[in-house]
Length: 517
Image (cartoon, rainbow, N blue to C red; front, side, top):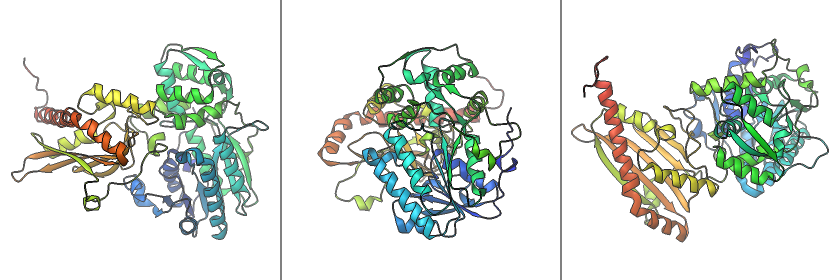
């Protein structure tokens, strides 16, 4: 078993000594996990975010300086880099659609120029592992180009190149997990036989933290990988063994292109095709480390790197314990809206449709809040499950997240969490949960869930569905679904009320009491 002590306590991990580290991409899977590791190592941390409010509920938010900056804004990026000793570049423009390569190129150049002007001590970039002398996919080529742009700057730069990252909540792990669990027998593309060198997320974080102490003359890329070289087929079968599943039967075929494969992954797993495609494209090639030079500067732990089997065991343990710090869905779905709900006066003139319902709930406010905070995922939406399921399938096939993303934690939410096809936009303990839709819609939509009280002290559940149409298609959409509102939204009111009242009765029942038929 590899050493599982905190990364800050491992030999070779630098002491921050109060140095200032800037972390970009902080709302994403790796960035959200890197921040607490840097804090534990003694760094001061500045988190750069386009919407700082999404970091408000993170457990470390009170220990970092949060700055608002769009990665494409040179002045904002320069301000974010003032006084920085080491800057972590964890930005990928997957949400920019077909123009993502141009956006990646522009943001990398902006960051490199600003880091040079601000005399930053080192840039650290986490990129992808790719083969030499082969034609790369657009996504892999963009990752390679970003690394070169940063290395070409006068700032000493470390580029870490990783293949599949294994950890609870990572897109790579979730893809493998759901393919293996849901398909005991499957026809797979031929790339499942290509060799891959996966790496545990814990080792990725150790390399990221350790890179801060590389000497100024080190200005290069490093391949990083775990101790095992496997095929994707080996990985699926290995996962099945660790998870206690029967042996999986797989028939590789050569007719599935990366595009078709990513659609297939998007249907079977929670990972949407826009995220699945770069993962699939990275496995079309054999991605095996060509060197392990990084160990000269970031020594391997005393008990070695984390192997595939242990990485899966750790990830499954975190998932069972609902102890998943960040998840691939922490970042917004590519193409999803990010507009916050404006104040109502800004929408005067009938541009905002509202379905507003309130019901009395015979339960204490805190019990109603527990039900609302646990909504979605395995708990569902308390109304007409078939309608939600059908709408979710339609959304998946149109390129949206559908209902399969689930939740990071079954009981508790923070701002920025994904909840099926929604994202938490606002949360006020025991009072308000506001969800912003990321499904494919001809407009913008929110679901506002509130715990209120009436003048005589009764608990009220107020639910507002809000929709801002985009053109005639949006108007037609609202008109088409309005007849079903009582079934869907009215049903949700009644279902939430029943769940809260049942929970209140269970809490009020004396310990050891049983029901008598």
